[in-house]
Length: 285
Image (cartoon, rainbow, N blue to C red):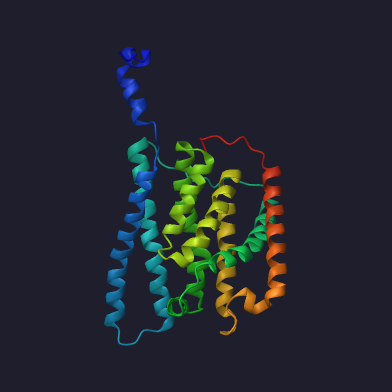
């Protein structure tokens, strides 16, 4: 015979409410739903944009970049809006993305640490070599104008950090352990890149982004990290066509030196952040 919880016996309605609110939004299941919501929004936005492109006899690269920016920003905004409404409906109060103030010393530390992280991330990306046809597709999609750069270096860091860390990771930290929450959010972050060549380094970058959010309790440092990674990756597109990666650019001996040095610098940056931000992490971030 099972023993009845005294609270359920005296206050059955309250106990039922506690069970309903055991998990806050999002859970693992709702993150899967959110991923497909983002895909659906992307398709719904892409269709009219493709029609516009087809209807034009000649499309300038600048106009194409503007459409790409719209095609990137609008689906993310719609998905963020969906998550915000879901939180308000499920939890009864609006979401509050943490734009908390942080100490000024964090900015140079995370920038130096992120620049160091770019080297091992490039090595991780090389585990799954991008086919030449896919690489050419990405190069054609990025037209090296102000709107393409704004999409990668400004729009992506702001919107993806709000969604992946400010909403998703914040909710996960209330449902799971910090380690599990950060890993799950990194998997989602990798998945939304929609291709394995970007997803692999994005996962490891997402681990660092999640840890920075957990330590600082603010999306701003993550936006700085994200923008730094994307700016560094974008700079490779401006290199000579015969030297598109660091080993070819530096030569193997200097590349290995740069790799080990960058790992040491990144480790030192993480040590400094961890030591200076000895915050008592709670699930009420």
